Image (tube, rainbow, N blue to C red; front, side):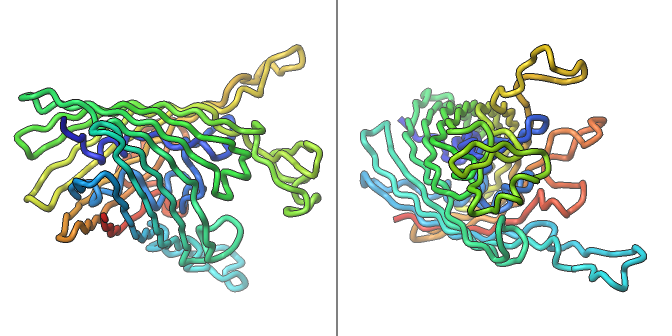
Length: 367
């Protein structure tokens, strides 16, 4: 049996649905507090951007550890803010208002149970190098969620270049964002297929399904942390839950479905070009039931959101099991705000303020 490329499996993987979602515009699952995940499509530790790691041959031993160091720069870093209002002399334009730059470190141990099954884990931390990007303070340091996985290496159909594989993952809410959303556990199941042509081009498809479990259907904050006055008057409304907790605006995501496509072309033995496209649909908790008091114009039921995440990049497999990758990553809504046309998926063209696109440089080492 032959292992299917990790790139394909990773690009299609549906991560935890930890983030709080507004019912009318639920964001994609997996928006844990990875840098920029609070802004649409901005994730520094992109699963489908760790391209260089995919090139490293798996060691013959049963266990292994991969250490990855990456830096990501949002497109807003290269934009200048102008103030052409009557208050231009009084209010600084703030040239660094959109700057987003961060460092990330991930450690991923793995153990091969049998020839076909491997268990793994992943823990990552992020340090923001700019004032913007964090949730609570400038230059914020954040722990990410811990991920646990079970992977089936798959089956290869001899002489065809076709392979299939599958994976199951669990997400533990160790990040501040997941804890604020009251996440208990995130689960995801994915199945992937790949086709290698002429030993140069590998095409992949994956279908993923995710289900999250929360204590509350909305994110919550402690009164003593946020201040009772702040949460009570939060825009969008809030609800007192008792025991010093207040539910704030938004509804958590419960389910997600991902359809992902990828292609990798080997330029030379150690250098390859990769592109991936993932279309994610997410469903919030069903908290808007219809009754006799429901307005005629109301839209009860689950909030539904759709999201596109893409990556384009180069990867190089250096000696000593070192991998280097350079990629452009984008996360946008499939259609424009007015719903009249489609967004270009591989780079954000609708203003740099949201930092929906970023450039990432990553280095990894397998032990």
